[in-house]
Length: 170
Image (cartoon, rainbow, N blue to C red; front, side, top):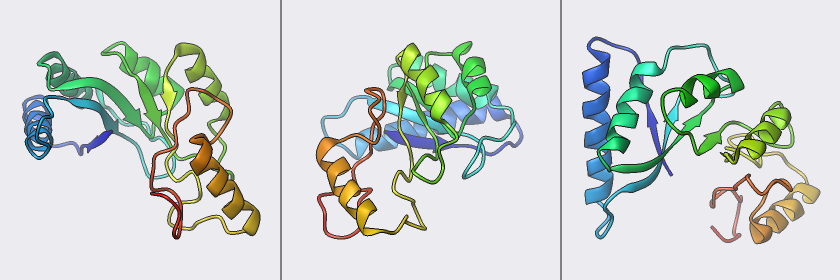
């Protein structure tokens, strides 16, 4: 999964498409044998929660890069259910990546909604992020999660490798 973020400025539509195409081509050229990026997430909102900000232009530009065959799938990061619905009017969305862990479970209902739509949920900082959740029980749970490859019982939830602290498998 490749992240892509944006900040508003002049001549957005042309600039976004150019930047996404350039970024995608750089990623592809850095990986011999890679012809397309599988998933590119458009990162919106703040760090911990979605913000109400316009995203039609960058998402449309990313959808055009997808149409050109450089990207196979598009996801969104730090979005609300309302923003997902708006995005789905522009292009297919295959995954959502929001802050979610044992201490931040505000997306529980959203995860259920996504599962019914067949959209994957990819939590970021599932074990606490920059301020890791600390306890022996959580360390044991982290090892178990790493072995099982899941954070919840939802089949549409993925844990991204590299979330363990310390010497566990990365």
